[in-house]
Image (cartoon, rainbow, N blue to C red; front, top):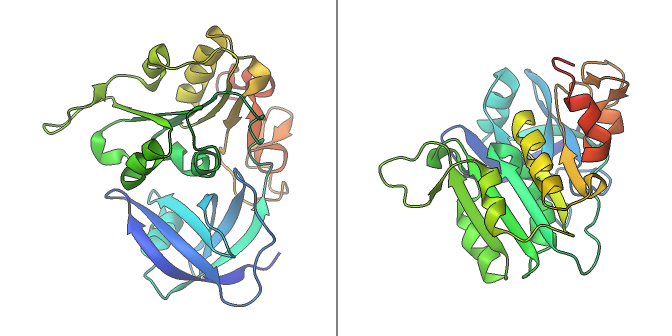
Length: 259
């Protein structure tokens, strides 16, 4: 699949190393995407990486990316008016929350990015958004938290290591479940694997069935099409069979060290 050219029409610096880009098609556009899917984003002359879709509508695609390697640094540095290549969308996305149930979203760090479409689609008094980060400086989408609260959602934020100006909660994101309705809810979780495992286990302990806890694994994906085998996790390929799985499906795989 040849990358289609997309122009950067807006950029927002989330943190010192994380940027949200809004892209519009220069010509042909990608097929419609669903929450939880990803594209392969190509920085011309550098390479391509998988990036989850964090929003967008009317043909626009929003990507939130952290600069951790050569390609992600090039994508992050793309100025307004520049062009990137996109392939996709790929992967199985988030499952739509059942009507009339509580929704608990648990995010660690940049794991909030692929969860953002679920949040914006489920805004209301039955939504709880639990956000954790290592430090306040690593929180993303902070200008949107009050907007989500104004729409009725409960938004709770915690950090591992506070700075001098931090007045919020300190601790693990799983500790926020102690003040959040969980039994009978559906849970959506994304972040580092250890955070996802502990969060999923905590939701199950509070009465959420493992088939109602949904994770996005997103580990080591490279081609997006299930051909290179780089993202193999046991019998599955994450880019083809995931990245979204229930905890019932993912638990036996995540439990095997170094798999």
